[in-house]
Length: 253
Image (tube, rainbow, N blue to C red):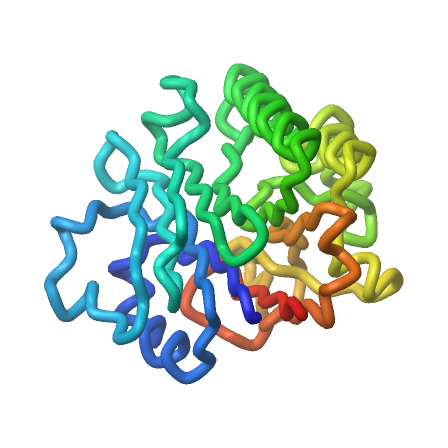
């Protein structure tokens, strides 16, 4: 089973930059998109037509902002929209689908760069999701969390760690929440497979950062320990354009 995650930074823009041909050619079994920045009603029938896929949408209330969508070749057995807390759910940041024998969370974690208040909101979001996952893991569920975490976990995960120690996305309190997920039974499967590899999934549009590969790895697959042994590979498609992020794919046995 192949699962692909991609922050497309606007689905309408990405559709104009080869999103659909790439998806149909690479044919993931499940595709998780973040930052779609549109409601389905704003897309034409042709833009929404991904042959063979069932699509679940969770747009933000605010127009042109945030939002996630999950595309599945087999319609999921169950769907949960949001995290059950209004201040998070109005921003369209979460979809949970039951895929085969596990729950798949497609998540667009908040960005804390606007203000200290948004950093607090981001940390609260991490806490809310982990509370939910703790309960599910305790009941015997297997879980995959994927999407844009908006945090680089370790110095190896960004090109300039020293220069970014006081910037949101690499703050100690943000990184500590990734640690907490790992302590609570999740595995960063890319880093387990490739402990020394320096690859990035996001590059600012400024200063030719992508051309110079001055990037951050902030798009992850966190897999519950009981499922991690079935992961065969994780690939960062860092040559794929179309957004300031690139797609990342996981192969599950």
